[in-house]
Length: 121
Image 1 (tube, helix red, strand yellow):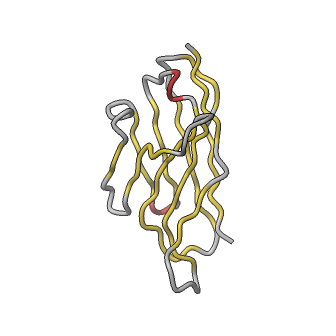
Image 2: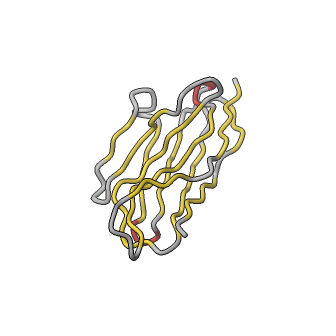
């Protein structure tokens, strides 16, 4: 059973920083891309940042220059360093991984349970 467990969310003032972590565990044969998405109340889930197994990154325009995604392949963990946070960054942040389980014949997407990030003005 594969699980993605996020941590690091919380309440911060505008201009502050938070670091999110997401660890994938279980019978994992390999992980391709990992990423972070977010969903604010009344909005659709949107991409924040992704990173491939080789380290190529992609960011939403709204977070470029403020957020940094990274990963530790040995630990099956992805991070999101969020600096210069704004009230509009308030949302539930979800971890995502495209991976293949031991014994599986296909690659599938998995999601974490989400972690709340609240930025006060």
